[in-house]
Each structure stands twice: as structure tokens, then as C-alpha cells.
Image (cartoon, rainbow, N blue to C red; front, side):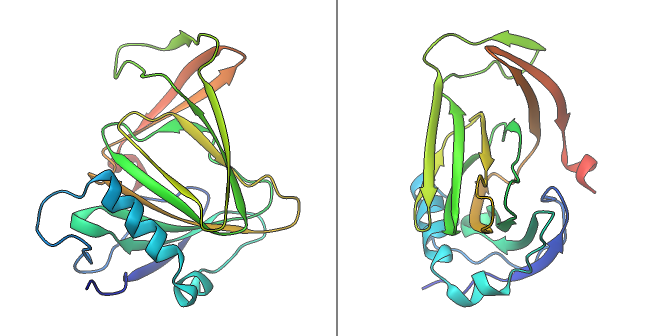
Length: 196
């Protein structure tokens, strides 16, 4: 049985993957092998049911807040608070797999069912039928593979949302995109050095 995730509270507009973390990751895996997507999803679902942890997250009426967690097998994990009307913008997590679950409130995820080139492009025209959208109420989550492009939003006008996220390997980079109709444009690539 794994120990409860340890936390480091932080606030701001974007979770910082290089923020201070606790000494040793809690692990839900029985070996030191890299966690699978299923293990990450199980971790975020279990963590989202930890009422004391969810209640420990400070909520800000204007900005997202977060607490860094120890994920399974050396993964990077976050508890994130979403004020009404906030979102991430279009982005991916590069070579990391991941999972997230809504712990309170409701989040909407828009995603693209397309595999983007990893490097060497600035603008892509998307084909019809690649858009996906899902509402994730409390207790609902999803897992995703490498280079998953999405945006996550709290569309509520008055209710905070809270979610738990995990990524493996810890985020090596995040690519941020803008979108106008069917055109997706790479705006910037962030690396851990940019988050410090």
C-alpha cells in the first residue's frame, strides 16, 4: 500500500514542473518500473477521492493554484484548482504520457485526434473530424499518450473545479499552440529551464 502523496503548495497561473517537490515519490507500483498509463489513471482517481488533500488546496478567485504531489514510479503529479472561466490554452506534454481526473466541479477538455509532428513545423492545417470534446464531472478522468494536444477549461460561471494530474516521464517540455479555425500554430516551446 502506498503512502499518501506529499505536497508542496504553490500558486500562480501555470503549474511549474520544476517547483520544489518532496523528498521521495510515493509509488502505487510494486517495482521501480516506469508507470503505465493505467497506473497513472488509477493514481489520479485514487488521489481525487482524498477529501482532506482536496480541501488543503488554497483556491484563488482569479488564478489557478496548485500543489505538487509525488506520483507513482517517479512521475510528476499536480493537484490544480481552477477558478470559474479559466483554462490552459492549447498545449501538449511532448514525450510524456499522462492522466487527469476531476476531483470537484466540472472541467471540459477539447482535444485533437491527430498525431502532430514532433519538431520542424510552425503551422498546420487540421482536417475535418479531428476535434473531440468531453465534459469531466467530479470523479471522471482520462488518460492519454505522448504528444496529446488538448486544452482544459472550467466553463462554470461560479464554481471552482479541482483536478489531479500525473505525467511520466516528468515533463521534458510543453508546446503551446494557438488555433484559428482549422489552423494550429506553434507559439512557443517551454522547457524545465523556462519554468524556474
